[in-house]
Length: 499
Picture (cartoon, one colour):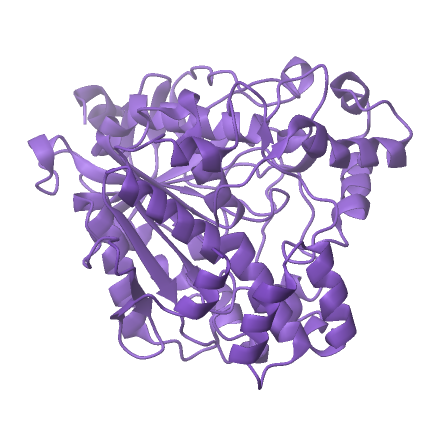
């Protein structure tokens, strides 16, 4: 820390960045700097435009409260009680947070060249319409406690971040993430981090974003490692991705252009967005926002680019939860309402062949049609594409790939090992009431210790502590019980997708 910062920052830790001096907060040898702008507020002439670098400030900027969240609406009941989604008012939503061991200066954790501590950058999920870095579950204290500099990022959501217009760039939310990673590259050394040892990690829509970043030429060189939690490479053509924008435009009775949308009152725009997207979910589909193959951020589908060797030098950790679908099916009653006839209709709609469905039904004779449908849909969306990507990377002799499965069953509402349940374990935030909404009060601390430690080890060394992917298909399972390495779990179900 420079003499200037040491002299002028009182009552808190200080960091000097190219844009100015920040004053954060200190607790138990962890300094936090919250709400740091990495780009200008996307309003006025910058609305529906690519992010512009943040402007410098005079004096000392207080960094002790979360910055503005992107425009969004809360989760609809009953998910709102399970998934906290705080809202912070303001226009400056392109901001990030840093947690770092304090003092930041000094030797790192013994990594290559010892140029500073390993860095992890968190990209939140939320179907590209919900979420923020202010969610309490994502508190970065435990990572900093264990020697990692943790960064969490806000990016534009919904129509503001993933609308497709003829008169505006596509994938603005992804462009925001790239801008944030560029900020990390240029600034993180001031917080004690090593810009050459950045791991980007995320869950759900955040994981899908990371798969796109792995494939994007605009993100090349911005990170060394990546973690994909409950996501897979996914994108749509511009024409398909535009359909949600057009549906919102039709509801608003305005042209489907950025110019027209910029003239719509923000609350009216959010109401129309919610009306159009509110009836869908990641398993049963419906109108949703998608990452688009735009020829710029994404020259092609990310799955194809990764199969062809994109990010071959990036170490990759990825995995899913055993009962992903139950977050969307159980609270809404779909597991009870979907009978055999509805199951067959939805399987045809989802283009899942009867041959594949037959193997799942025969292997799960005690499960209801809605439960079998949920497993099939989640495997098609998540587990099977991840296995395919791991196989492509193995054949291409890339950097190491590691797979995991999270299987500890939550007692809350019978959700079991549902989507998003692993988050409190990864961040080691089981004590928070916001985490307990999904885990209940008695989640196993030892499992959180093991899972969090694996993520820390991966960020520091590229090795989470188990055998990398090989032809025997090793998967580290986190619960139920103690973590254990399993080869080729549920192989009969996986193989039927290949035939």
